[in-house]
Length: 440
Picture (cartoon, rainbow, N blue to C red):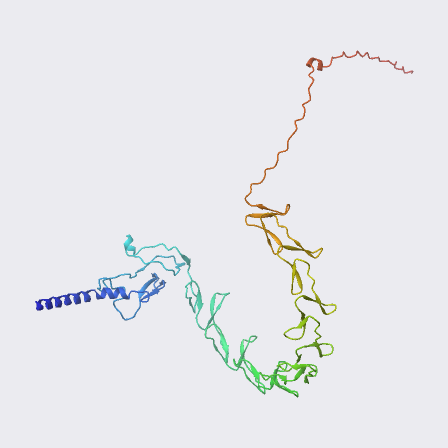
C-alpha cells in the first residue's frame, strides 16, 4: 500500500514537471512582454524609397522568450510571427513624405489588398529636402546643418564656418569661440589678443582682464590705477575701492574720512558712520543735537522712545501739544481717542449726538445701520424693507365719468338744401364810338 502511494506521487511529480517545462516558454514570453521590453521605432524611408511604418520591437536584451517572433504556445522561430511589422511601398508622390506619427500596424493581405498595396495617407507634408552638409532634425519636419556649418536663411544653404586664428569650433557646431586670452572682434571677425596691463590679470573667462587687489580699472586709459586709501580708511572687500573705519564718515567732496561727532545723549550706529538719539530723546536736524522729549500729562512714550502718545480717554491736540480729555456724548463709548455710538444708536454729524436708531419692519440693526432681513430688499423711496416674493400691487384704473352726449337736432334733408335763386339777367350796354374818318 505504501509502495503504491509512493509510485503515484512519483508519477504526479513527473507530470507536473513535464507540464511546467512545456508551458514555461509561453509563460515567460508573456511575463517579459512589458512596456520596458518594447522599443518604439519611428517611421522612416529607406535609401531605396521604401517606407517603413512606425512600430514597436523587442528590446535587444539577450532574452529569447520576450521576442515578438515567439507566439503564446512557446515556439520561437522565423516561421512564427506575432506583432511583427512589414514594409510597404506606398507609391507616394516624389514631392511628399509621410509625417512621422503613430499609425497602428496592419497587414494589407488581411483586407484582401495583397502583399503590396497603395494605402492612402491622411497626413501629408511637403517633402523636406536637406541641402548639402545638412540632415533632418529630430522631428523630420525641417533640417539642420551639420557640425562646422551654419545655416544661411537667405540662400537656404549650409555655409562652412570659417574659423580664424586662435579660435575653435563651439560645442554646438554652428559658431566659433576665441581661445583663452583672446577676445572676439565683431568688426574684423577675428580674435584679438587681450592686452593685460601692469597690475592686472586675465579674467575668469579669459576674454578680458581684471585689476589686482589695490588697483582699479581705468576705462579711459585701459590701465590699472592704484587705489589711494586716505587716513582712517581701509580697502573694500573687492579691493578696488576704500571704506572709512568705524566712527568715520566718507566725505565725497574732499575724498577723505571725517570723524563722526556724536552729541550728548546719542550713540553710534552698528555700522559706525552715523548716530542715533538715546531712549527719551529726539534728533533735531537743525542743531544736529538730541533734544529731550517733553511728555505731557496723560501721555506715554512709545517703545522706541522718540515720541509719545495719549492715554486711553485722551486725544492729542497738535496745536497745544497736549492731551485733551475726550468728551463722548450719551449712548457712546471712547476708543483710542474717538467716540463711537453704542449698538442701536447712530451718530448725527450735525449735532454730534448719538440718536436711537429706528429700524423698519423686517430689518435688523447692525453697527448703527439697518439691514433688511433675508428675502427682503430696501426701498429707498419709502425707507421700508419690501419682500422679494410679494405680488406687486396692480395700478388703479382711474374712474372715467361719462360725458353727456349732446342731443343732435335733425333737420330734414330738403330743408338743408338752399333754395336756388335765379341768376339776374345782365344786359350788356356797349357804347359804340364812331371811328374817325381820315381827311386827305
